[in-house]
Amino acid sequence: MSAVVLQRVPGYPEAMPRILLVEDDPAIRAALTRGLTDQGATVTAVDTAVGAMKALAVEQPEAVMLDLGLPDLDGANVLVMLRATSDVPVVIATARDDDAEIVRLLDAGADDYLVKPFSAAQAMARIRAVLRRAGASGEESDDRRIVVGELVIDPPARTARLAGAELALNRKEFDLLLALAVRAGQVVSKRELLSEVWQMPWGGADRTVDVHLSWLRRKLGETAAEPRYLHSVRGVGVKLVDPAGGGA
Ligand code: CA
Image (tube, rainbow, N blue to C red; front, side):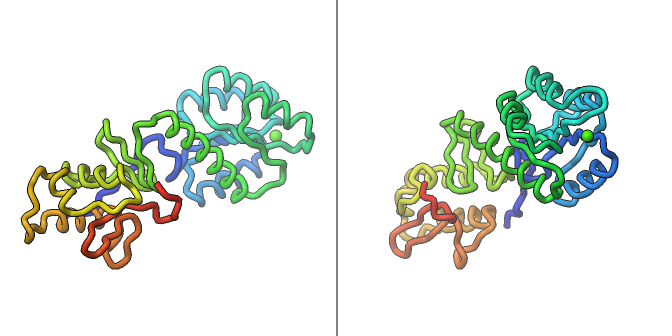
């Protein structure tokens, strides 16, 4: 009986994002640190531009929340300095509801902005959105990957992730998942799977495919009774689908 083993994948922008918060107002800094931490982020908070540049190098944050009015340097200058060395997503926090200024900052490389006052929940939603965009463009650039819903399979690396967590699959489980993923949305017969994954002829009573399918289901966190990705079609075979219905 195999256990479900989930590993966090470094750099994957879903669980526990590391956020650098640059804010000189102690009350706002404390409230945002608490609010973002409550929502699962790991927050490093600094109150100056110099502190921000240091923390950027040391902490390697996945996203930056940058206040524009800082004591030592204007946040717009911090943005330019930061963009010279890093592609990290940046959400600007501004007290100025000034269209021209906001356009200038977006052109200078900010990914999004929030006008004060805003809640930690709003800040977290913007950060998640910029992280998703950053993650999505990263995936598009690697066309060897197969993406079915939240399932991402990397054939050259022989790894599979579900919602960012790496699945601990043995060799045959991975081959089986891959054989289904390359034909996502299509029913594949067990005879084909046995031949393709195990290089074995169909033996009628052979339960190899069924057993591995049940292990794979367990690792995907689903059951035959309540399928999400793996759907058995009685008497025909099995297909892998995007449970959100987005197709393959
Ligand atoms: Ca400020």
